[in-house]
Length: 234
Length: 182
Image: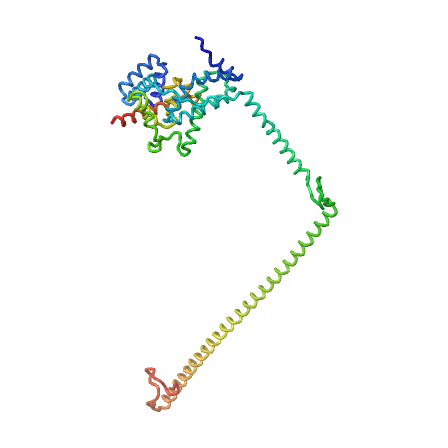
């Protein structure tokens, strides 16, 4: 059985509204559920306590203080009954003052009260147009100056970038050319050495053939067939 | 037999008849005072609360419609005044919270001890350990003899909440009494 059902049963029992089915359930619960039985027991104890309760008699107190005739109360209350109305009236007055531009001025010992005492000239459409035009011109000038400054700064920056790029390109190409020329000279020198060696060998071979044809023995210093250095090759 | 009804006394009191108002006070003074004693645990506080309740009742007497029993209407005001009393006295303690025994009025025990026999004294002391909201339900149900619907109306709660509070209060009372007897 749920807690809510137990509460309902106990409440119905307290109010003496148990039907037959509820009574059986209540009695069964009292036997089976010790906690529920304890609550029932406690309820009985409270009933007995309430019946036997013998409290003290109340102390004497000023009962007169609690009695204020109602017409008097109304009268006293009436003193302040105008307050809500007054609050509404003052609120409306305050709103009217603020909306109608009501103002009070003290000038040379005179108190002036009225609407729009400052007599500020009302602005015509022309004056508004002039003001707008003046503002626009100012705005345009300011923008112009700003743009000019911006363009000058951009040009300066572009020049600096161009100079830096040119300098870089020049320095880099000069170095590359120098390196290329050095390589070319080295190549030409090597070719010349090779040519000299080639011609020396040709001369040696020719010399050898001439000696062989004329029956002249070869000198010791002539190059041998095993590739040693020939006199023309030195 | 010759006792005037509450409604007649109220009508006379509203018309400015002082003795009618005093008759009405005499009729309910004791029950309101005992309600105060059981709720506050102190005779002194109960006396203050009683005066406060009757002043409040008189001020609102013209708003009594006569639809329900006057006693029920009276105890509704008593309940609200009692709650105000607790809020003033212990503003930081919730009404659903069990009062700390150490925080209780030191004059509580001797005053409660003057009540009836020993079992009554124990029960009164155990009631003081209940949260105010549960104590009020126990008070109105057993000592005020109100129905659950009347209590719910007086406390501005649903009938089920009142029943649930009483169910919890009974368990707590049993627990408190067991501890006291041990």
